[in-house]
Length: 181
Length: 181
Image 1 (cartoon, each protein chain N blue to C red):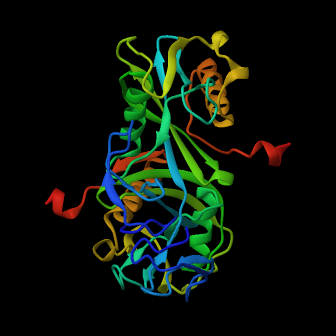
Image 2: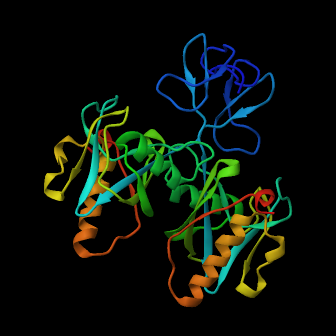
């Protein structure tokens, strides 16, 4: 961020009065431009004993498998965002969404909020950002070809919870691969 | 948002290729500037049978009572943000944070994420953004002088859960006062 979105002035990095962190401050109009984490809303779409995965047709992690998830938009709820992403990426409609987990990914300033959702019918397809979508049982999950650690963690928790017959509300921090070695 | 933070070009509102919503797009450098909801992280600080409230020393709702809560910063987890806000607004340290509720406030593009936290000692004070802080029992909550509907809802749920002896994970949409009449 170099220029003020309000007046095109050249921004400074400075700690505003009463604040504790450096912000992008405009010396011309005085506006302070905060930058905050973004929410990625996603879903585990469930049909009978399978879950719906999609294979990414976009960077990063082109060709890797993932759960439907994407940036939450202004004007929608987190659950609406998760449903919309499931339509967009897997051409599938989920109902009865239940909060499942919150995952902090601080090194990219993202908070993943994942839901469990039920497919009313086993209809799905490859959305514009997917190469394909597929219903998989636990033994069919391509664990080594998943796109992101948060997807690995979410699916792991889901199948663990299913085995013991109770779905919790989970909260975890996902460390970067570099940090955790 | 009028000017490009990257090159100071004059932004257009346009639907980018492959997108479905109008975005702020720079005709000069091509950058797309997304705007997304913000997370407000907060805490119900609990000491014995009381909760810690603070009275706002800032707009909006100057003089009204609230729970410690504020915008999550880059680089922190949601729980860290809730703890930090409790220090900043009520000069109190909470431990054993448990996820308590997620509240969508779509008309202001905010997602409140609230925790329950335990005060290790009944030490607290008025932070820079508070006129005072006070431990209150249920019958002492100033229900008509609370700052925001989301605070009212959170406290209501908390005392209900406490009466039945089980704290759930809650998810609600908070409608604007204008919309709900």
